[in-house]
Length: 406
Ligand code: SF4
Figure 1 (cartoon, rainbow, N blue to C red):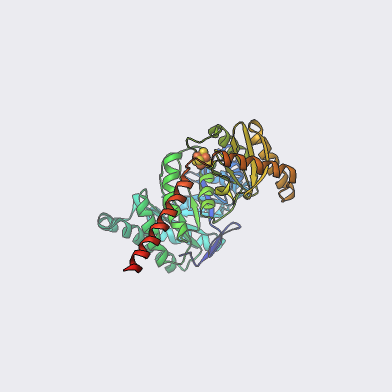
Figure 2: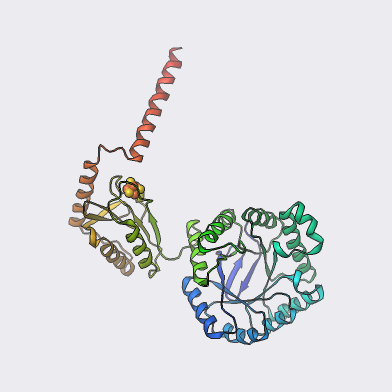
């Protein structure tokens, strides 16, 4: 269930029906202003809505003042253990401050941070991690780790409410994907505040992306989660942003840039898909329109499978076809396929219209028909499925007749 409350981190609305915000965290030493600002600009270009920076020392607070002023996207200061640094980060103009009330040094210190946040109108992110739950929940953590996480989070929420503070979002982080899913589902039913989702220490780009896609994707598909961060063991924070966008695009929650669809290839492959798909994926990064681009390794099955794609290519016998929304656009020599595809995408980017040349379209359609006719005898998976379906219908009709005859 989506959160009822909305907060604003800088100018980014979070919760209350706002689009799910993409967040990441810089990997640089925050005090290294040049390196941190370079990384912030890179993640902003990749589509991050909000960026978090670690603030473990006074010199990071000094840098934070400049970072907040120069960053193209809102900045969250990440504080652990030291409430004085949280106060300083608020005074430095951070758009949000993340604290773990469980390790900040007691309720009076949490109260001091909340009072300063109230005064400045700055939101807080309050969070718990499965690795650092309070002492009184240790036994529960052993018996029911999900309930232990949720209890720690609701304790924090109650503390915020006692302090008459509502300008916050909540996060519960676990390294376990099932626990991340179960605890956030439970918490979303109990509190109205925005939720920040992440699988903590998810792993490398490969395994971390998969764990995050499963954990966060499941929750987002349920309508749970208002900001997301993909934690990956890479220095390149923009990789986290790209993965976050792929998850949001796959669930059709947000649009950003093109969507690439590529067949998995099989023994019918007619051209070097590996190189072609990688080349197309790289070149598409420069485009902003949410066009759908399909790459089919052969034309044996026609282009029906990718009929929803704005543009697509397929190939056979040293030739290739560019198609659009289920119809042929033109045939081209295979070595020109990718360049010709991008020429069409470029035209569309300028005019927002798909230009059709009737002669080229007819030649392309004839080529496709020829390929389909030549392969008419081949039992492709689709044709096998169609034959199976037909047999099932026949069987059902025969059974019914037998029943009628008694
Ligand atoms: S049949 Fe053709 S389009 Fe389908 S997976 Fe194989 S190569 Fe790709």
